[in-house]
Amino acid sequence: MARELKRTPAVEVRWCKMLGDARPNRFDASKPHQWGVDIVLDSQEKEQLEWIEAVEAEYALQHGESKKSNNWCPIRPDKTQLAERGQPQRFYVAKFTLNQMRRRDGTTSEGPTIFDKDGRAWDHSKLIGNGSKMVIGYEIYAWPDKGTGAGLSLNCLAGQVIEWLEAPALARTSAADFGFNQAPGVETAEEGKDGFPF
Image 1 (cartoon, one colour):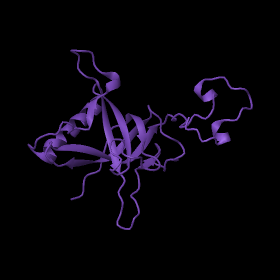
Image 2 (cartoon, one colour):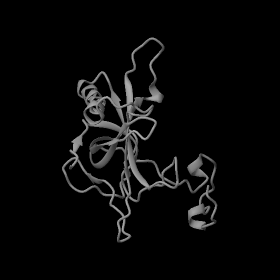
Image 3 (cartoon, helix red, strand yellow):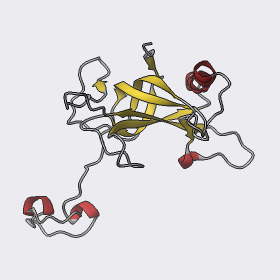
Image 4 (cartoon, helix red, strand yellow):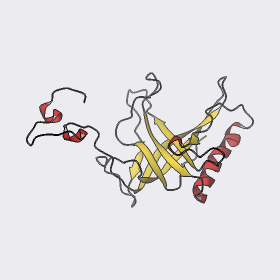
């Protein structure tokens, strides 16, 4: 049975790793490499609250009354914006991933497809920074109970960048990049190819 392609509302993203090669699974290196993105949801925004409720409702649709895993839902309170004691939680984070699969012929699956706000293919040299706004196209994967309960995962298949914030440079290569003094004309680590990882 084909899974249904769904879309998020336009939301703020964090840690967008939907471009380029899949990254190693940070929890278990033996598992497939992944692409991923986190989205930030404001429960006071009607469309975003409805999306949260719809994802939570998918559990019963996919699993019925099956026992829930402790991690059954990919939506969690945003740890950077926790509510004060006794106050309702306002901000949540939903995690999306996509595993890179190896085919029988040895090739690997492609990552998510990214578009700009006008529907053109995204320039992969433009990394997507935290705070950018995107719509994520995804499928829900209902994983079975293997003794600890069942749950849901969100597989990111595509994204459309609505508002782009540039990601900071990936590598700091000079003293100035770290806020240190650097004389004009001094060679950076990148230029010097000194092999130091910092």
